[in-house]
Length: 460
Image (cartoon, rainbow, N blue to C red; front, side, top):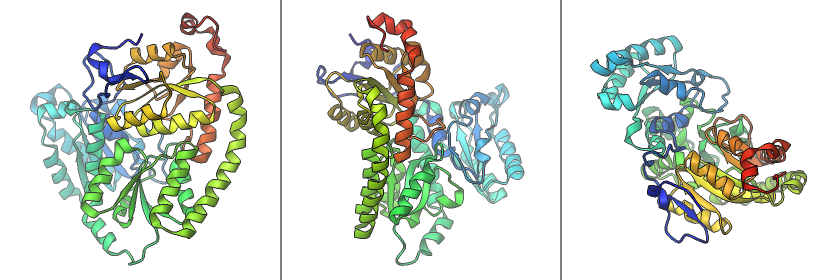
């Protein structure tokens, strides 16, 4: 019997049993201890990989500590993003305001580190005390002659998804800058096929891998938002004729803004798993309507898959019939993971996300088997109960889900933004298979008290 807080009843559904439409995109239920992050964290994970910008958190020190080095994003060259700066608001600023402290911090940091732009993140306390962050940013921008952009990510104003939107609005300030106008007007009348990649953050160097695929197809990548990204790169975004959105939850709003303002079309893709990685490449080739590009894409996919499939066979032999639970930030990743697990002979018995829409959950219902539990904005107690009741051998999630898996005595695969192993692309699929096999087949799980409580025989 499924256990959950009564107010969350319609955010949890078992396929084949429940017939109601799932509710989602709601504020987290009080007392749920949601796995979601706050608005500020949502904006931080999107903007963090911009390597030559100053990232200043205007708020208590805990906010900066919580999000320091929050992504496994690699950068060629500049490394300023790896430092974490905070105005460290204390009781005095809470009472009298923190604008003077913000101005002083910005001025000193810009002079010392010479960034190419600065982002100022507004946290919960800033929204409550009413600091005029916009005015301070404009003043410093005028004095220091660099872009200083406020990120309106006050935590109490919504969910992690609202943080994504705040980050996209901040990015658009650079996309729509006078420098971007100049670069766009300087494009040759017949530019090479050019795209932007939105929602790819160069975790473990994945951006370089994806760019190489497109290069082999004959496609130029103007900007990757925001993996291995610099301020000057962002200003080139309008030179692209197509936006490819990899992480739909975090970057679709920027794609929609650019479509509305500049007429740039966009396609949603995923770079995880064999089918979705291949489809992402074919979708771009079909957009440009080039027979030569399509042929190059076919050759690329054929070559990569022919090398990959035989290597997956040995892992599938051991994993056939095993069960997995998935809980990730964006549902588009969950679609790909379900397909990738099937290549390994595994079925998904629990799947959920932090930012899914009704359309996303309808699609998840279509591609999962009877009895699969779908959950929106879950919490530790729910996930623990669901993975045990459904007999999952593996939980795929992020840093918050890791202890849940280990306490329940099942394998864990980190598929979140802190990871250091590349899981995107064809090479990433092989890494994913190795990691899943290693953790699921570990003999340590047979000693788990939690597993013995639910199963007469040890799972391994």
